[in-house]
Amino acid sequence: MQKHRVFRVPRSYASATHETLRAEILGVLEPIIFDSYRHSSAIREKLEHSFANQVEQSYAVAVHSGTIGLFLALQACGIGPGDEVITVGNSDISTTGMIRQCGAIPVLCDVLETDYTINPDLVEGLITDKTRAILPVDLHGHPANVKQLRSLADQYHLKIIEDAALACGALDYDKPLGAFADVCMYSFAPFKPLGSVGNGAMIVTNDEAIHLRLRSLVGYGYDPRKTNVTVGYQNYVEQGYNVPLDGLQAAIVLVKLPYLKKWTAQRRAIVNDLYKGLSGASASLPTFRQESAPTFRSYAIGVDNQFEVYQKLLDAGIETVIHYSPPVYRYTVNSDGMRNSDQLPVTDYLATRVVNLPVTPELTPDDTDYMINTLKDILKK
Ligand SMILES: Cc1ncc(COP(=O)(O)O)c(C=O)c1O
Image 1 (cartoon, protein in one colour):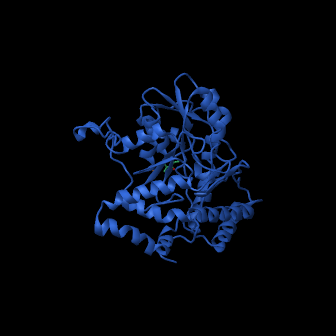
Image 2: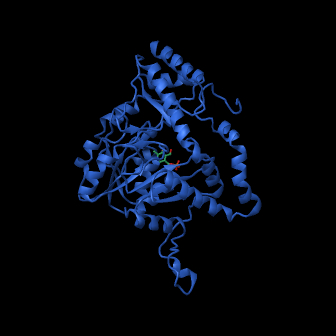
């Protein structure tokens, strides 16, 4: 079990988990590599089917990355030049980046200090006649209150594109994420709760029209439903891309999918121990709505002296990360093109405080105790 364990408490220990699944993984990879690459599409389709079932959605489209997944989801919702999309500033650069790639304008909404997700009470004030969609992010695996946003979206005829890149396994109102959105994206990048060993993502929807548009965009703009054509090129109905999930990554995710519930429970148990152990310490711990059942990609806590604490945790062998700080609207590349970035006091405040403690299912009680004691020691000084 010590293989590749460089940190005393690592951020991910996926290689050890893969070791335990070695025979299963090789069993699925073997036909692709040693028989025919044509098995790739069958495995990808199997993963789409199993994933759609698991998140209780009608359709799932496996794509090359979460970034392209967001782009295609926005395109499939008809987002284009000049449209406004209400989202948050405390996310990966790809969230706002893909809105901008569509030619649309990210309008930034402030977030809740409790769970760091979009503040649904502030969204209505940002709606203009150019608003076409809301793009909430389930940051760190914390469900945004998409149910509350749904009524607003219906009232103003807006689409909801949910960025659940970090949140595979989370539930809200007893439903897997995506239930209140028009379309939802889950990432399979290696540090995500359901990781491949490269890039990958799944876009899910209950909307048949969105699904068909996604299929076409993912595969060269090809519409497989057009059967009565005389020559093949007549199936190409729009300019598309070629970005399906690679079969090798699909195989790994397919093997891991049945374990997701168990791993999510383990992540929650680790956070529960951290929460108990750290209460009373001078750190602010996230709190959640009663209906929200996060998957914890990490444990994002707030501390004074963010960088000092971060460095001391690293020195103690705890693989801590500072995610989404500075917020995306402070990046040079985003110095123009976003709206409302001067009205985000909570986002700004959190960016100066959040440090992400490692949470990965393989951590032992000893690891958790070590994190609690080390952090308490650092915060006392
Ligand atoms: C919130 C969020 N959205 C989107 C992405 C992009 O996903 P990917 O890395 O699969 O392209 C990430 C990646 O970390 C993310 O954290």
